[in-house]
Image: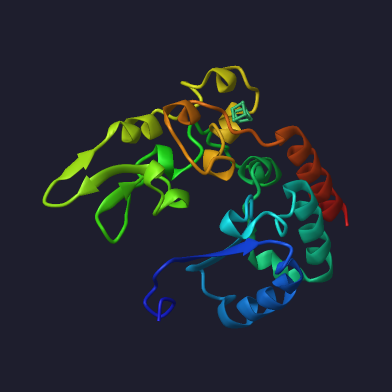
Amino acid sequence: MAVSNNIKVYLRVNVDRDNISDLPNLSKLLVELFDKASTIKPYLYLLQDGGCSGNDKVIEEAIGIKEIFELEKENPSMKIFFKKYHPAKFINSILENKVYNPILRHCGASKNQYILDFDGRVYKCWHGIGNKEYVCGKIDKSIEFNKMSKSWQDRSVKNIEKCKSCKYRYLCGTGCLAVTHYTVNDEVLKSASCVDYENLINSLVLYSLDETIC
Ligand code: SF4
């Protein structure tokens, strides 16, 4: 119905140890059903934390990148997925000779994203829905925000000391703190949440060049 009504759908696949080997089958199905539909946008995201299920199935990002490249070599249908690795947009801009737009903020949580739960509580980060530490306000007949809302909004590489001088700041935008913190407060919101950009960029460049040369 979405395709026939020209509605854009972002189809996110959270990848972990349990489902990574199923990606070729899923990609073949997506190609069969939607290859001609430009409004269906499937993408892969390597899970960063397993939430209440624990982290046993989480694949370290550099290892996941390698495994996905290897799967794609054998299964070209996997090209249907955009791969949302941390430095992917930056690397793609180089490989595709496109302008890279530097970022100051990691995600919608520190921009204009607001999420409501069934009880009218307002959140900035969808990782924290249902967690009272993440509540930023309440909506009833009017909206009231608490001071956490501003703390989320201020989360930018211009405001976090460690990020200010980091060479990856315009690719990273402060990182996702929800991955490493199950509770948040003002202190946590002012802290950097790093990933290993050097290693990830090296891996992505090497695998992409290998693919281009092959
Ligand atoms: S890698 Fe760490 S220090 Fe650098 S911008 Fe990202 S969160 Fe800040």
